[in-house]
Image (cartoon, rainbow, N blue to C red):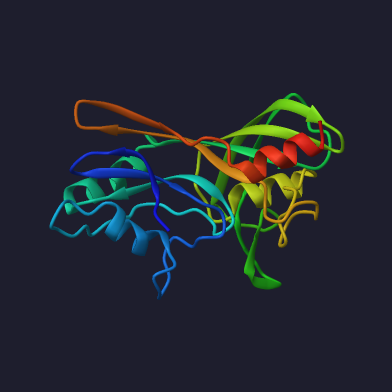
Length: 212
């Protein structure tokens, strides 16, 4: 397996992560392991650094730093709120044409493997969503993240009443994997700004087509 590269220079790469592949793992079956060979220069090696993550079953844009300076620049950009992240989510229910979630966010006290908005904590999670297409028994949303919490989109949409289809933890059945795709990623870089766009995966397009 190789990774499709959406953007790359000497400091930063954005790869197109397939669903089902973990970002990091103790084997050759991970984004980082594949990136070491995919991004390697001729007669050299690459040492990509993870600067943010996607869930195993989420597809789309994933940025990797290729040196320490780039990793530090990404950390500052995240702290400054300068990284733009947009997702496509296929959800159950009929959300309004647009909406926002601004909630408390933390570990579920009843299950440490899960996250929830139904907890008292000063930690916040924020996102906005916009309806792109209303389908039979589902809605296609564009989701714009303001914060980047673990499982955030899946949890906030589920607890708002619009669970992601195919999400085995927080969502509802109806697809072989969670229908969540990191479509766009933008960030400041050198003298300008990079915007990477990941094409819609075939399984996501098929899930939409089935409900059209």
